[in-house]
Length: 122
Image (cartoon, rainbow, N blue to C red; front, side, top):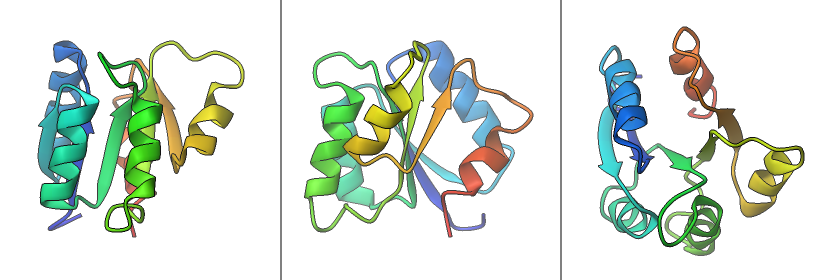
């Protein structure tokens, strides 16, 4: 993973800390946003290799943010992986329709997290 960057869009400080700790075990450069609007701004600024997007965010939700990213010609190629704690039947399909390359549920499976996200980055 050397040299790879990741944008984490997560409004829950406990979840953000967990992701940060897990990513600190690798060579990911991490950018953090607590809402969709800031996440979109950081994506435009840094062009990360991967975006982890919480589905439930204050203001614009994560799926709307993903749609906005996919409409931007400069950002549409960045894989977005949806993160959700409230997984319901059909949610994964909704995430894929919004443009997400993957779908992970919370709580995060700490033992497989790095491998789970690495499969979305070439």
